[in-house]
Each structure stands twice: as C-alpha cells, then as structure tokens.
Picture 1 (cartoon, helix red, strand yellow):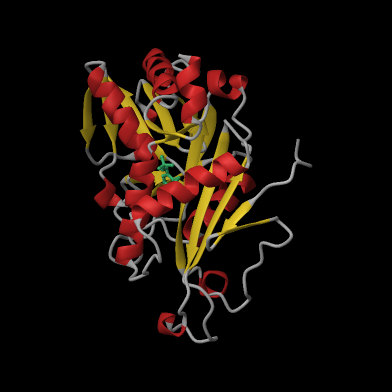
Picture 2 (picture 1 turned 45 degrees about the horizontal axis):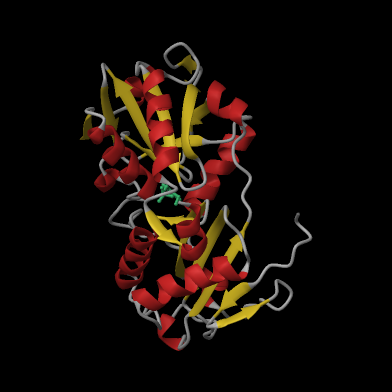
Length: 302
Ligand code: PMP
C-alpha cells in the first residue's frame, strides 16, 4: 500500500521520501535544467534498461551534463534501488539535474549534478480503457522544434508537454496529439503514435519532433518479427482519421488503442486486432528483454 516506506537513491545513498530534498538553487528546479528517464519493471525484469541508460547518456551529452558515474554503475544503482524497495512490478524515475548553482542561468555555476532514482508502484490503465481505447484530440500547441529544444533530448523541461496535458484536460480527454510546426503528426504528451493502414504500420520519424521511445522501438521490432511492414514516415491528421487502427506507446502508457481522434471514430471504435496482437507480444517481451533484479529467484522459478 501507499503507506509502505520507499527508499530513494540520492547521489549514492538511500534516503526516505522525507529526507529526499533538493536545493531551491538546483537548476533542475529553477530552469528545468536536467534530464530524466521513466523505466518499468515487469515481474522483476527492468525492461530494456540498457537502452534507457544509453538514451539518458545521449541526453546528457547533448546538454553538456557530465553524469558522475559510468553507465555500468548507473545500471547497478537502478537495479539495487528496485531491489532495496523489494518491488517486482514498478515504475522507475531516474532524474539527473544540473545541481545547485546561483540564480543566473549559467550552468557552469553548478558543480554537482544530482542523481536521483525513485521507484514506486504504478497504476496501469485498466483493462476496460485498453479494450475500449482512448478518445483523444489534437491540441493547438505544437511540438518543440528540433532546432529549438530537440524532442530527442529527454530533458526536465516538459512545459511543452504539460501545455498539451492542460489542453487535453480542458477538452475532457486524458491524452492528446501534438503536430510539429509543419502540421505533421509528432507525438502525444508522453507517448509515441502509430497508425495502421492496410496492414502496414506507420510512425512519425523522430526528426519531425518525437522522442525515440523505447516502447516505440520495441513495437517496431515486434511488428517486423510478426511480418508487418513498419514505416517511419511523415503523416497528417487526415491519415490518422482514416487509419484502420491507431495506438499510443510509452513506458507508462504501454500499448494503448485510440478509439477516437478529434471526433472521428477510428476503425470500429474499439481496439483493433493488430493492436491486440502487438500488445500480446509486448506483454511477453517486457518480462524477458532487460535486466533481472532478482536473478536468484528468476533461476529457481524456471
Ligand atoms: N514521447 C514523450 C514526449 C515521452 O515523454 C515519452 C515517455 N518517456 C514517450 C514519447 C515514450 O517513450 P518511452 O517508450 O521510451 O517511454
């Protein structure tokens, strides 16, 4: 239950939630200067942890943030934090802020990046939402352009995405689509989009303004393995409206069908057969492809 004590990893130590404090001079707090990852643990398997860590270090390199540990140490810290919290199914939030500096924007006044790993239980979309699919809208807020703040960087500056969430909520839906500056479909506030037309899958190329989602990649791998053609190709709202199936992917969202976009019913208005087949394969993959937190337990179980 939520009363359970959680251990939070902060710069090499485990602290309680009450003790886990960051300075008001931290540039992550002042300016959103930092990076993060959201990772899932399924039955003791940290799904595609190496890929998440690679993306984290790529984000860090892009914003000239020196992570004070190696990738191997980071992987170990993530695994140990999950183990310390004794969870088998969990959501991991890995945050690295620029650290404490002065009130200027200057990141060179910050000398100690803060490395924080939070592990908690996760509430899934319930089965009914998965079966019925989500009703979504397209919002007026456009995706950050790659030449401004590149959406490939998983930065702590999520205001673009938060504005999308606000617009979605004001319209009475829980998720929404962003277009890029040219009007092509980019992604959701916290997930990637796929459309299916005549048995082919399409997802926007990341250069249009989408995060290179780990779930997106997993779905492309699965779909190709199942024999589907997958194309990273620009498309418009019209293509979404007339698609046979539409679904969103993300660490939190997993693989969730979309039943309606801007008032247009997608397919027959419920989760389509290909989405269902991909989700089934995804649910197997998430327990196998990654790093086991409790290898001893895993081995005696088989
Ligand atoms: N796009 C955005 C903007 C996101 O925040 C996320 C969630 N990390 C995704 C897509 C999905 O990426 P992933 O599958 O790696 O969680």
